Length: 479
Image 1: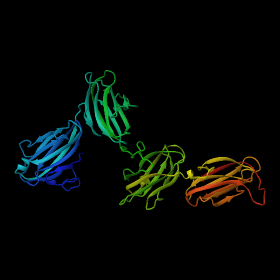
Image 2: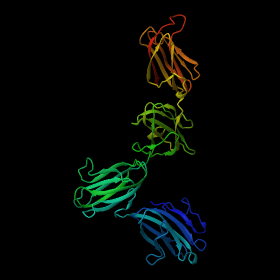
Image 3: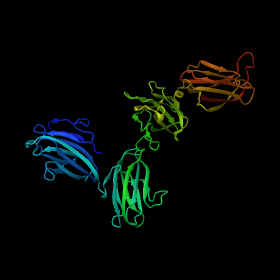
Image 4: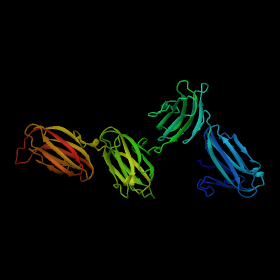
């Protein structure tokens, strides 16, 4: 399918792509007369393509003429009448990739006398099998490999995230096909001799993921001295497109806001980013105006195992994962979807944002150790050091358990949990067995930095001078 564009028009008459003059089947209608003797459009053509042009008179006594010019102004096609009538019908083979300007005018242009309405149609009839032709997805071409012509090359334009299947099937002779794909810098990105798990010598490159937008070259050649004809086909897979599958997630970086859409045929989209242990990140997925999407977002690890997910924390059917601590260096994925996923009913455009927060641990007092959930530390209480102070970042609603267990000495462990102002919010003396301290299943009241003070019991009804080593464990409890 071709898109038509307006480039220049006499008397500054505008025709946009949404104009009523353009019907659904891609036909442009226009009128030429003394006030408007010509219209000019443009189309982007690829080398080797064969394009059929047709101009039909639909009213008046109009005698239409057709001209096609390249970007340098050189004429590629000029046609007045076809088959003795007033209509124009002619094919053009594109010899150089680029933009071509299509002029529809009346015979004589400003000096002409005819007037009336016309229809302009353009049809892509195919692509030549000649060496160097440019292919579009869905094209099939026939070629021949011989001693005099041992390889044939074709080019194609690809966009990052495209996923392609390319096949080279022998149609005659003894040909043992071999396929190679190289990028614009002539670096090989894929090669195949015989299809895997197939009882054939035909060649196929399946699931080729394009990592960088640009021009690529297919080299169709042979194994050994075999020869014969072949059919070469290039096609997009159903999962093609950056972000449309796990095979080709769309890169997103801290500070980015990307726009896309959830549709009934594409109910989830995939993104990827690299993060360092301890990064404090937030992800927001918000529907745009006019969308009925009920957003649902998932943060997953490098193997797409979900770490955390959210439905409506952003309000108004928007999703938000706030202040998440990255557990380890590596690659992570974001899956943007809708409530109930495949079985969901909503759809529409959304904006996805990824941000990193300033690490609050940077501003910690000197000597305070920062902890993550699931970590343990060793410490020691003595006459010279009555307590240790630790810090962690907690989000509202998280449920935490903190334990302080003696490992030697006569230590009577005591725990205090403090807020960002270092005010005590809860404490425990002997919640664990044998004079060990335990703060169990405590719900974080507000998002922010919290401190853990590990010390010895200091009351008046026991020994205030106990000492010894301990192990402290900070854990998040999932309900």
